[in-house]
Image: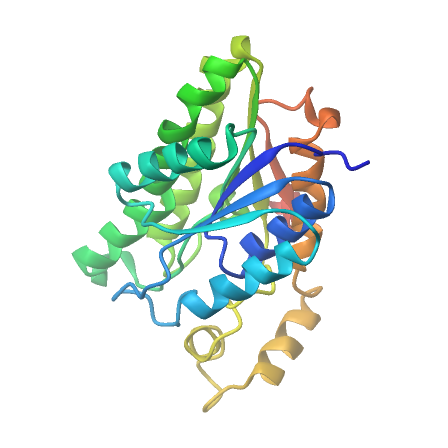
Length: 273
């Protein structure tokens, strides 16, 4: 028997990266999975976002575990679309036990030079998208008297970061949103937490645009250059390592975690509040 037998999890940003790893981890413990992803590009993002092919591959990986998997193309920036994701999940599966509000983007700009649209895209996806996801599933969880919610923040929420003021602001806001919702729904048997990983080895980091930002002194930096740089600093976190913490929070063993902002940082937390 798995820790999550019979449960249903909705995962935003589920096409690849951390979303895919979390889907696989929860499915392996018996959960059926609903994968929500925009599968389209955002103009202010310099690297390719998850595609329809990525989403289809994740669906097949989940179904290979023997669990049901429903893909839904939806944009977390839209309250209506996220409400529809929740309604379709309940219609098809009868319940929502778990929400992983994981969808997010990264971009780079100095605050003084930042285009308005770059700011808006970041806040709309990385913060308002979490709000829309919460807003969509909480009424159902309240009605059932139980639920587990985990949002993906970042270690950057606890620190400043050059050319990432918009990202830092959004991820800090996620922590505040999590803590506030935790207070509002605890009496209904719902827990709400955030995970704050340091750099995770996903396409958000492993792409040429990010290599150029991280290594401006190297002409056409490669993946090998990036990996060498990260290894010198202790190495990137693997998505499955974040999934291990997610499993704790969404299973019965996570019942005592509520309103927590849990860092997974390989020691970076020693330099943060």
